[in-house]
Length: 263
Image 1 (spheres, helix red, strand yellow):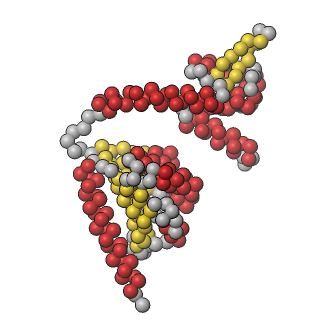
Image 2 (cartoon, rainbow, N blue to C red; image 1 turned 90 degrees about the vertical axis):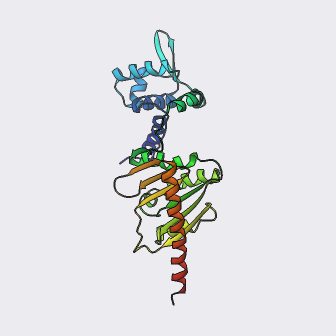
Image 3 (cartoon, rainbow, N blue to C red; image 1 turned 30 degrees about the horizontal axis):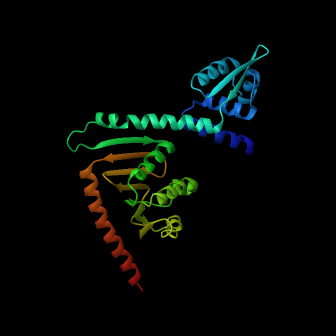
């Protein structure tokens, strides 16, 4: 079982991996941050990577400006660039990519209204697909069929990170969801979270997937079992799904009124 220190270290290493470092590169960089100026042997011990691999990793990191070296009394010592400098390196990459975006977008071809389909797998793929809804302009709306169960129960922090960013962009949600305790827990925060939820009987509408309709896209995200997410980009498909949602939205309201009238 990992102790608290190991868990924290793994969290930081994973963050560096998400920013483009390979697993062993991330370990070496993190080891150098903790050690300060260090010899190869010290880096090997701290990173738990064999010496033969560490030499190659240090050379690659030097070429990318992430690690520097100095020779003292005939022996090389290595330093990691500061966290702030590492951040600037990542921002420079993003800036260069953004400069290329207009040209790249001009290369993307479409044939009529043929849908563009993307498939994502695993939790990381789920997050990528979910975050695609945040690419809309400020003040947009998402129409959703969802539930508070499954992945959202297992990882509430992930759910609230997404909600926080959605709120920052003032993107509102209208959601139809099964009436269960997990969904009600989210629904209690509807006003705060810029969301309106209409609950429907769980015995008839036990959703295990989330469907988001936004812009000219439709995303389907599994919340239980094998995590798979699909994004379909098509103006006509999205338009049709929005009309179907509006019909379901009216139906969900009629169900609510009918249930309230039952004595």
